[in-house]
Length: 272
Ligand code: S0N
Image (cartoon, rainbow, N blue to C red; front, side, top):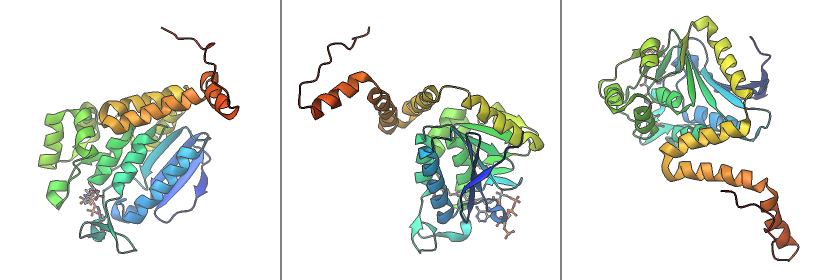
């Protein structure tokens, strides 16, 4: 099931394409196992913001270039004093912004993992809504081994997925887990042969695309509200407001204001 992918925008570190309602974002730095530098993350943020506003896209596939890695986390070669240093000389931890954007995107994001999902790359797949893994996928955190840690989604979401004991094991021991082990612990949704990875992720995306976009949007926000506290509730409430704006009842309020008259909400039902 190969799609005719159309390039949406040109970038240096990533590839952003779309076809048949599916957007595909590829981290394109295979020479460093798709590690991200600040510019990589800026480009991904730009692409995801475009995807959010693009009415033609309903599902996103996030993957790494090649079969060796999904993403190996922050680019250790540019790690400086207080963050990863980009061309402008500023140290940043901007992958946190990307994590939030993936969470708040009102469309499902599927991590398509071939090879390593390690460190900050592992946290990225954890932040995605679903993960399809190839049989060669390898998962793990390396922070305590290489002098970093992600105590945000890297801990809270991971614990939700695999439980606290397992999440602590993953962080404290920095072991690597194969695709079957990841499936067993609820870290991924499916494991397929490498050659079927693309086809299977498109199949999952298409199945989602057949469903009601607003139902999917609310469900994603509801899952986030459960874990993201006030920020998650804000997202969910924003979606509810969006829906309310589509009602005659809300429109009556705005119309009355513009027509300088009291609003008449009497005809709108107070449902049980
Ligand atoms: C991924 C691993 C296991 C792959 O091993 P393999 O297949 O044996 O390949 P290698 O020979 O090791 O690697 C091939 C080439 O790629 C380079 N490379 C690999 N990973 C990186 C990387 N992360 N940065 C830079 N270069 C990388 C290798 O050096 C090699 O290059 P050559 O051929 O030139 O020698 C293995 O490679 C591995 O373990 N990689 C390192 C993983 C790592 O340390 N990742 C960073 C972990 N830290 C984070 O991700 C930061 C977390 C984070 O982002 C964050 C968290 C919270 C708050 C903020 C932040 C933030 O920093 O923004």
